[in-house]
Image 1 (cartoon, rainbow, N blue to C red):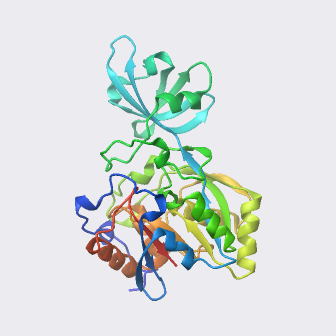
Image 2 (image 1 turned 135 degrees about the vertical axis):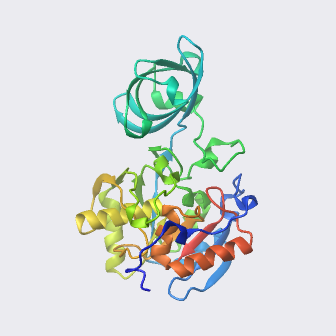
Image 3 (image 1 turned 120 degrees about the vertical axis):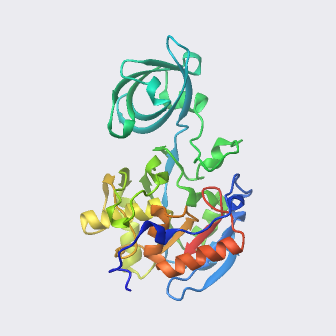
Length: 348
């Protein structure tokens, strides 16, 4: 059955993954991870290392990278008056010093309650409860909020990573600069400054977009019919310089290759919303699964994603469902490392 006409079930995107293949720590150096190259037209696969990615990029191609930077968004504090322990996870900046946060345990964070973090460096008042049980809180502090977060916050590692992260920067991309993500755009973790410089010297353009990753990235798909799933919304921005580079690449017959599903979603969201690639900013809840018609992307560098997740659905849309499921089975057999700190895949 043609992928455009098929009714997809969530279970179609299941694969069996041994727990020991979930990477718990990042490799050093960054570009030493393995790279599974999947040629989407033929379904052929090659097994390489990430530093070999340059062999598959041609002069005139354009790599699009997400320069969002992860907030050390996990805060541990105490409830004023009782001393009860609480955990806050910053999700979305609303305005001023007001944020939407995930709290645990939630019953301790009723509207009107107050919390203290970092021995008083940061204080918070709970203002409201919103849909889904998240809280709207207002923070109080002296000095710079983000400097305080750097001092007392912890990286919001995904639930499947149980080992402590010794170096916070190892959960940031080397080119990250726009603070605002609740999770790392992890496809970029494999790049080193030296590899990026070699790529540029070969005549490959690098362009940047910003999409602040929300925790909805890790939210499981709970519906049986994929088309019934509602995506979370995330903020994106693309400047004129990047839009011009992408349009120039297309005009000259080069390929646009996104680094990560977040860069992919940004590009395709703008093309869908604006009808072309141009300077743009806004919120997107685009959901890409097989049958989606790509308007911008020619290739994708990505990690290996969770079974039945929206991300494995996205890569199946680009590379073909059968190709992806076969590639994932091969990756398991070849003992690739999976998820955020794992190995990479190039779809070209």
